[in-house]
Amino acid sequence: MTEKELTEQYQKLTQELRRGILVLAALSQLKEEKYGYALINSLAEKGLDIEQGTLYPLLRRLETQGLLQSEWNVEGSRPRRYYVISPEGSTILQDLVGEWRNLTEVMEKLLAGKTSEGEQNESN
Image 1 (cartoon, rainbow, N blue to C red):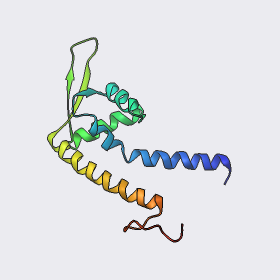
Image 2: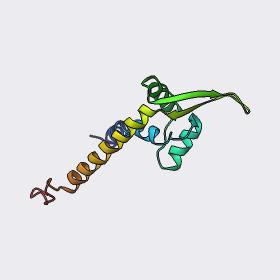
Image 3: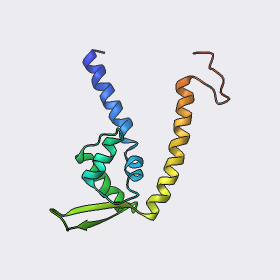
């Protein structure tokens, strides 16, 4: 595999890995009302960059699924749609956080080469 192919493969896999956490990231930041651009900034400040073309379809999908609520605010210089997590979204968020913590614990063990009992694998 050439250096260019390796870089392209890495970028694709990184994008795939990041795509899996966007729902959790967005829900975690919408406990208080935010409009899309403010959410982009909030996520970026914490180290997660997301494009508008990725975020807005995600927000619409989460709202359609009942996990977010939104309303237009026409006060101020321009109308903005504000999003906030719904009660159902809060329940799902809590469950996803638990799942995330379980998965990261397992991944830490896998990446460290440990068995479920905490012993070092002999192959490492």
